[in-house]
Length: 401
Image: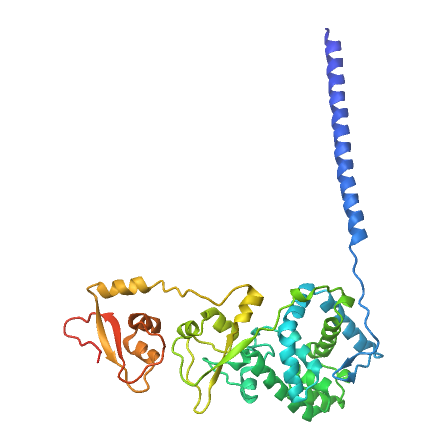
């Protein structure tokens, strides 16, 4: 083979390689574009977003909304779109409403407040015990000073803003007071967001007594339309694309109330005495903010909700049979056998509680219960308690009776 033939063969070989590469590229590219085209075709075919239809006549608490006013209609339209397509939150609203609306509706009726006001608890908190950045608390997002004015106990140990029932009664007291001021339930709802004073100033300044005719800040101008949107969606779920069965909703939870007229020094021990866990005690009584419960005011009693057995059988498939684990018992017993610890005895004084004794000796209430094998946290005068304390250094006294 001469040089010209060799060069010719190399050229043909290179040309063949180039042709193969081109064919592979074309096939690969065609395949890619084919896949993209198919994907886009399916996307455009199946992905659809609709404008939200709603009736021309809307009412809040029996008061007609002026839907002929384009500005009002467009504000309502905005909230209908936002809330319809906020699917995860709306599904949770349906679930929680099944649990809480029966109790809320009953309280509203007792106070003579229109049923539509239950939707305020939905847009304020999603029917959850949330805390806002401003410090508003609970289903009805009540501020501390407002809660006190409305008759709720609000302090570090007890905060009734977290109690769905008591806070609903408090909200109703506000609604009735605001209705005396404005004579319009729509204005009452707006004032719940803006405050009675702020809304009254705007009404006087603008010479208008109708919420829909007022020029207000963005949040308050959206407030009632949001209520209207949530009301429409929750009253007509299928119309807005929400489908669920009764089993998907949260059932109301039956409880039995236990009256307490004295301090509960250790709620974990108290829960055990009631046959439930500390967790469930706190879940059903979120208004108790500490691990103990102070004595109620003279002549009053604390009402503590204890979940009924049916709650566990029907809702969780469990029975309220808890094994109380005391992981530190072995350590405590070991300490008592070490040379650095001794056992002392203390005679309970009149009115003294376990928490008082625990503070006195700088030990935990649960340790006192374990050391003395107590069945109850109640103490009586003269009762003798065993306490494990560090052995004092030479020349110091041990505090004991």
